[in-house]
Amino acid sequence: MTLPLRPELAGLEPYGAPQLDVPVLLNVNENPYPPSDAVVARIAADVAEAAHGLNRYPDRDFLGLRRDLAAYLGRESGVVLAPDQIWAANGSNEIMLHLLQAFGGPGRTALSFAPTYSMYPEYARDTSTAWVAGRRADDFSLDTTVAVESIVRHQPSVILLASPNNPTGTALPLADVEAVLAAADAVAGGCVVVVDEAYGEFRRAGTPSALELLAEHPNLAVSRTMSKAFGLAGARVGYLAAAPALIDALRVVRLPYHLSGVTQAVARAALSFADELMAQVGSLRDDRDACVAWLRERGFTVADSDANFVLFGLFDDRHAIWQGLLERGVLIREVGPEGWLRVSIGTPAEMASFRDALVEVAGL
Ligand SMILES: *Cc1c(COP(=O)(O)O)cnc(C)c1O
Image (tube, rainbow, N blue to C red):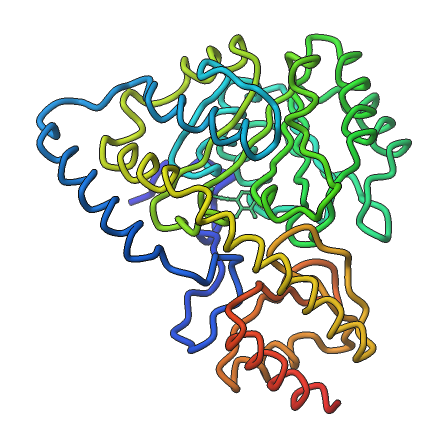
């Protein structure tokens, strides 16, 4: 029997980083610190409370969560946002899917600049949106002349910019985002610019957030996630800030009651500990800077990072290095342009294991 699989899916494997049972996991940019006992206790109590109401569908518009997220983003970035400027979903992966369901589709194009997040082309494929990847400059910044040329040529309806970018760690200056927005405004039929700030909280002091541009750009969407800075990857909560009219379009394509009552309770409980969790982000940022400095002292080429990971190289045989680390119990990621490897920032003990293993494997 033949299954009527869409031809563009024929022969494809499900995407995902290897989930291996290894002592030191530095491969998917998770926060290495599990929720504290106090956070766990609050989550447990609030989920128990929510469980009493699980016979009912959850609040479809999750207004309480949107209020809390708006307040958090205001504290984090200094940009005042109203709850109707916030959207949330099961991870920012689902946020991106909503964006492409609403603004992409057959006959339309999504544009990004590589190397960047490897999931973007999958969202495009799954929504039958044509996918075009332009190039970033050699230092992984955006060459705005090249970017504007691609926008003029391809007339995309959606542009995806990760900042800080995965896997390179590169944050975009606001002037670059503004150059892209200006070119997007000239696209016939309109164009939504998505700045994916999944790693926004890890940006270095003085690096701005694209949230600052929201007030002037009704076609800008800034997405964030609780998976990285909040250490809540297992809860699956992503969110986005944009003008209310853009959010209204996402409300049309979402599945009914897509955000479960349990998920809403977990997210709100964690948000009530935002200050404690952000203090931990500060120490991860310091550990990131220390990792960059250590790698440079040992002669590696290292991309500047505003994220909780570091891209470093250059290796003639990066797979051998990756494999050697794995044999020593340290799992990192073989990703990015040829010759580079990416390591997520773990606990100080995990980083020591990484350094020791790398010294051995690279023969330093
Ligand atoms: C990790 C990551 C996300 C977050 O995905 P979730 O679905 O929220 O866990 C989004 N964008 C980029 C670039 C990422 O690296």
